[in-house]
Length: 220
Image 1 (spheres, rainbow, N blue to C red):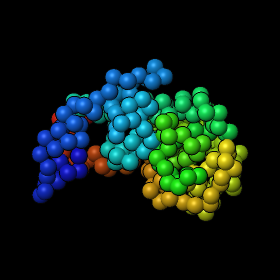
Image 2 (tube, rainbow, N blue to C red):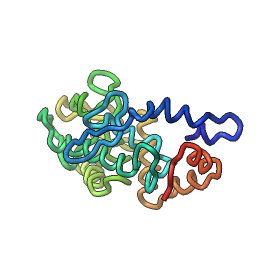
Image 3 (cartoon, rainbow, N blue to C red):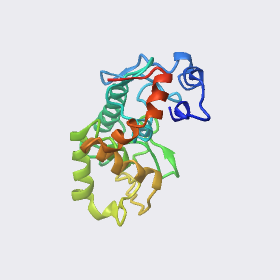
């Protein structure tokens, strides 16, 4: 969208439709936990992959009422988040700590080095940014996780700059380490849930509106 929005070095719409969307092959008919997956990324065809897919692109881009030839992006991100949440609640591998107030799988530090945590790559590691950056999509579930992380786990996973990147109750692994890209999405996505502030700023740019129109996005 940013590339299509550039007034000086723009890309053709075909780069989006034939590249990113793979000629429509990005669409998915998969249904998990009675929730349509809608799109598939990098082979993540059952659970939607790490939750970062629902966060980074949407710090500024408002998915509410946003659709194109392939998806309704609010439904896409909410379903992806709920699938991730429901997987952690189900906890098929029986990891300690997982549950309705302790969930969220996305790329982070790990007991085995950096890893793209997701249901198909579940190492027993919970990543706070996954649940906290999902506030717009799952406000009740995200608030339950926030309260558990802060009040129950407390100083074990909280430090000077907020929650540490990741932890594993199963492995008794609580590294006091931050990862800036994971810290990044928490505050603006909470603010988007509260007021829509960052979404309003980004979507107000006329260049962005032109880029969206060029790629056949529709904003309701």
